[in-house]
Length: 134
Length: 131
Image 1: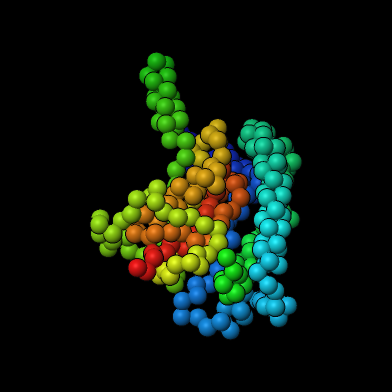
Image 2: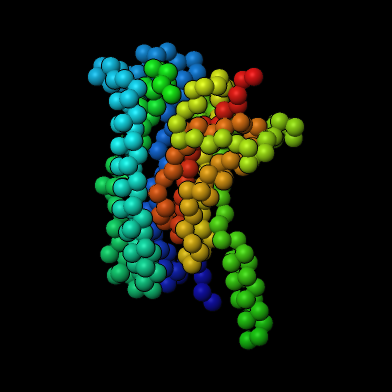
């Protein structure tokens, strides 16, 4: 009678955990910006790490940068999406034979870019609202 | 043998019927918002919830809380969850807590999570307009 503690089960469990680490992990949604309720402008500017140069930008400049940030987000998402199909196939094969799982690409660079771009987007939205841009 | 086949087909039917499942939570200042305390009359129609990746600057609003949802695919063979599915889940949650809009909406990237072969997370701030 097999038990959940036998060697075979443990081996399968370790294999599954390894696959989870290798086959393109999900990226969490970036954190939300701090709520402006009961916060002074100075506190928000400090938390959002906004510098003097940003504060001097006009609405048109902020809009133009926001467009560029959105385009960069799309580009990075396409990189991850492109590798997702490959990672899925690797995942299916990896579930049967471990070695294909090593071919998965976790897209760490694209994921980090997306987090940084989202932070910039939060800064730009704050600046737009501060300047009452439309 | 026949019984085994019936069980397998029943399981396949159950699994294919639900291609995705989701979980969600609402917090305000790190504390969970009690959804049970919201009356039926305060709840909104999900289709009328405004969703934006930015802020709303032309109306005054109060923050209800931060919504976090994750849409997971049920089996390895189902299609990956999409940002549209996450947006729908955000709208449903927002309606449940009586919000008018969800601002600062953002998504993660689809990938393997501890509970699913394909999970996609979304976050947003639920707000209610001040009349």
